[in-house]
Image (cartoon, rainbow, N blue to C red):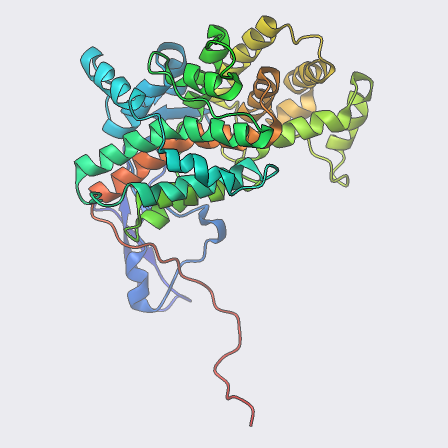
Length: 425
């Protein structure tokens, strides 16, 4: 740790407070403010936008430069050369697996994809029209009831076993959420299929015919999962860490992350993209909506453009743009009016000075929503897909936190309510 110090004086008075300054391997330095409590002070940072609540070795984002690294590897290289399960291993273990390690890990995932038959009964308690995220949150939390007897969260081997289970079972549960909603029988995973192939099979297969999965669609789904695998200390990941800091069961912690992801400001952005395209409705109305988007007094906003973190091009969008074209070409969806609107919007955003100057480039949500729609996945399931991809990141952060010295999370507040007063006579 650095010996540098920041000095804080209040109202110019004597007794300056010295605060250590720490330097990471890359990115901004941080000021350690923990000793402020000894002076009767807290920092005030709504949304924690300037606060590092932990240190981590997993993911680094430079939003200004459009950089996303997992354990140091650029997301573009991982998307081109790796696959989802290899990235899962990387996030959990810190290094890419060699051939034998990859085989062992993939086999462990493959043979943990099936869920207990009691889970099938659990789904029957949900109405057919229940939101898929409500079901997913419930059934993932319910895994705590099935895997608790021999779970010691202080044991690294037990933590890794929990990680394998939840990564393996999440696609199965996600597909079950869909099948329950449409009234079709649940499909069992096939041990001779990859994780992405299994997901497509469990989503769209039926007992009436043998498994048949388009390899281009399976590859696209694997890449979608990979691109969503982790994104540093976002709202859902921070929620998983906060829940985990209490010593809670890992499946309950992941369920808390799912609950946080459900919010439209976090995981619902790709669903909002499709709703926007439906609202535009026809290519002839695009210019009208572009004018509205540029009008600061108009509440309409183009969804899927720009990003809170990336002030440059979202590096994931560069990858998924190519995947999107492959899927649309394979499925012959280019004639779909919705996709024609999307393509024209994309062209405008990449060429119009208004969008270029404000760096409102298409982001990963813009393209992922289009891909999922083309594959045939309903918009209500989009965030469930996001959760399935984000699971390795959540469980890796949980595992990392418990591998180190940690404290229960306890944010402070600026109290602005009544001071002490007596109960009226």
